[in-house]
Amino acid sequence: MHSHADYVSLHLHTEYSLLDGAIRIKELVERAKEFKMPAVTMTDHGSLFGAVDFYKQVTKAGLKPIIGCELYVAPGSRLDRGSSGNDETSFHLILLARDNAGYKNLVTLVTKAYLEGFYYKPRVDMDLLEQYSGGLIALSACLKGEIPYCLQRGLIDRARERALQYKHIFGPENFYFEIQANGLPEQLEVNKQLIELGRELHIGLVATNDCHYLKKEDAKAHEVLLCIQTGKTLKDANRMRFSSSEFYLKSPAEMKETFKDIPEAIANTITIAERCNVDFKLGENLLPHYRTDDGEDPFSLFSRLAHEGLERKIGPDLPEVYKERLKTEIEVIKKMGYASYFLIVWDFIS
Image (cartoon, rainbow, N blue to C red; front, side, top):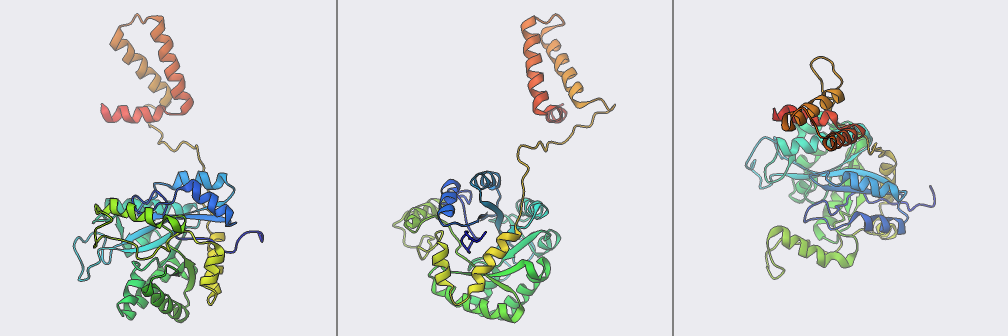
């Protein structure tokens, strides 16, 4: 273990953060190996589209995949549409899966965010987080997280109240304040306040860099990506832009230098990485099992229906070539274990 770097990036947007993240998984894995990082994290905005692809590529490279998501949290209820007195319709929150149960909860949260909480963005709320908090580690996110948002506006009591709420929901050892190094003056200010508040409330600190692109020189390309997302041109003065070019995957050395006054924030990245152990069984068939009325095996029902269907189309005297063809098709479906799937579709259609 000791030959590894002692820093892991826990806040990172891949190309699956549509038009917002520009980090390709393949290149990310190469870069992480260069930096000797033992693990790599993905925390795309509001979705888990990339999880399987990410898991496959990272494990293949011999690194540990940490699967997370940067969720949008409604200020009140996820069911409210319209603002609740402040101009924010959602805040950011990073969740990382500690284990398979946590991954399941993450999937449930993301699904409900789309189905129940969608308002501009797929949103969850405190109520949902409370129900599905098991197996997860939460980080307070970037300046768009609720706690940093409150601190920037002098709403210290509200920041404190929210922090304690998160600590309570996820458990004291599963909630961290995220301090970042992005060259923004307001971030430096928030970092200071988070460090103080963390000491006061006994909440751990973790250093991240909110990576949106891989290398510093990719900042320009990322600006173009944001223009596409927002329908603006580079000439446009009031377009959405990142106000520094620091949102790249920084090396462990850079991060340690930046946070040398607060080494525990770097050490905690490893502590967290070691606790995140999600294990996908890839290639497993998770299709539902079709329940037949009389307990007939789904495959034999499927096979019978296929034969009947062909006879209906061609008549009882089947030419040999059709028989052979049907036999081959049925064999393939049997081998793939898809009989139930075909029956479910058949059931829907009929």
